[in-house]
Image (cartoon, one colour):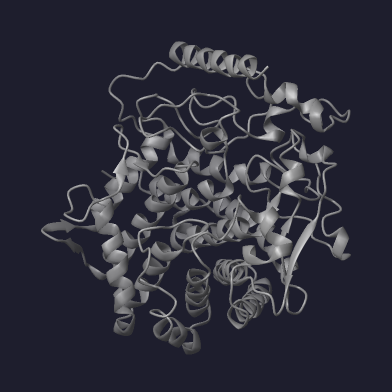
Length: 502
């Protein structure tokens, strides 16, 4: 039986490769001009496909329906809404908060160059998350960190609209600690408070106030959320805090400093930088490790505000940037033969989108102050950073050895069999009959394209050799996530406004 299943998988992979070689002939002379505005629009629409809860009348991903309507039941509280993080039906608070921070940062840095309708859509995407995050911190000395039992969820291949798996709510109560999730939630609410400041001052103030409360919880009760016995076997191994909670304390404080201009938060990041490890792991950035993003964020005050007491953050930011530049003496990041940033571990495009984002943000800071970076004997200008970021963007959109767009729905050639329950099962609109947990397996194992196109979804991406097999089963490559897309919104906004940048 085991050999038979193995042979099926081999045959399926061979079939997918054959299909790709027939359909996806790499185009000669890549270096095409891309429609970044179209890609931006689609990157934002994707979030509507990830929505949980009651869906509004203006829902644009029409094959989705309402779901998770009892979320919060075991605490007798309303935890509807928010986003499913990827291709399953669980709401993980840690990556959702990070996604929200990155969407808000995208708007703060690049919202002024977004087309007005896309700025509105981006704010709607942020608010869908912040409305939920506000619920997670609505009770004193408690934070809700997750909804949905991932172990039972992952046993099923089931539409979110049909979910009959355990919708367990996981909370952390003081004096137990959740500094990572609470710190990231504080960052998300603080960043979003600035994004809404002009369009909805009342909502902005609510976000700011709750950000401070979330940060106080994070700082007063220090530790990782996934160390709590009631959480660890359900958060792990999916979204364990592998890198420690200290970076989220600095990250949350840095965002609150920017949002409030309160010197207490400035003092916090000045005095706690060393003790909380601001100089550690400075070359990482993602849902678990905030160091590179923290250093870039704080550098703004040094470069534009001459706040030299924060110089160590700027030095760390520039050390990180020098590792990205292949000509730099300190370069050590890995690239595929086709030029894509590559880090092992799956969902690799999260690194490409977040690094490109940080490069563009730092380039803006350098431009504003007419500065550049010295990486040993190599002079790195804002233009160098933008060119490097553009190579990552163009690779994702199709300028790669496969000739494939890794964004679903962009161009004529993109992954058809993404690892995503709602996309791969018949829509509730076309097939209203219930599809039970194991009944979905035939769709999971099918070699047919997904019936519902999850427009704008960016998959995990190719391997270290630029190879990609369009296989739903290979979730490390074929599963989209919210935190791949979130920084890409800002990146695409920049290039949509500057399409002829070279």
